Length: 372
Image (cartoon, rainbow, N blue to C red):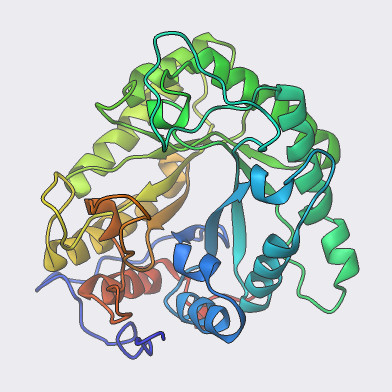
């Protein structure tokens, strides 16, 4: 199954050509360096254990994962936590924190269909009832938050209570907001979920949905402005962005743009969390398909550059997408996002795997560098 032994990740040389190692960075949060790993979530048993161990050895400290409402509450009032309990137990044993994306709508709610919206088979609607969505968020916090029922039921597990909650994903794109993005509608969702989670855990960190800068929907800067105009101030602790770009420079520019916008709004202390970045090493041509060597270079340069500015620019964390390449979705087509993995589809490590490991060493997130 997993064809990489982390000898690949542990090799001493840089995978980004003759690049000199960047200088060390200052102290960072223990969940600063993250990963999206559909591979780990889909696996089970010893396969999952091996994947998680490999990720932790590579310097991953946090996994960002969708907590899907329809899976957890298949019928009204009936909850099935088995899938997520197993995942939380495995990540806790591996020493990994989890950033959940509170997402989806239950099957017992009809999809919303705004007028003049264009819906496809993959379009996700926001929930029909914000109060139900808020109750779902609170249910998750009561189970997986500090002192949660999951931890009390499993006293032998290392406790890795969830303190940070990301509300939805990319609502500025039509595909994630019923075909017609609406910043005010998203802010209403964010506010409802924030109130519910904070009622359970007053110290919880509320993270906005990751907002990309895409021509497919409302651009990053305007959408953030619309959120603030709609009353988002006070509903969240951390602003999340998914700044996919053609190069490191593009990611840094998008981050700087949002930092400036927050500063101008008087939110100069509000952290920014990059909850998705990535480049494709192959696959169909796109603005993000750069080949294996540039992928590795951008991984190293972007992570270390952002980390060096973390204190001054209030960078909360960085999440790479994705651990491993994936095949096309059922009924779907190949596209660049299936080729951003640090591992190839067969499990072999790309140059980017070594680059991520090298970046983790600079950041001090390798297991040997962290005292837990």
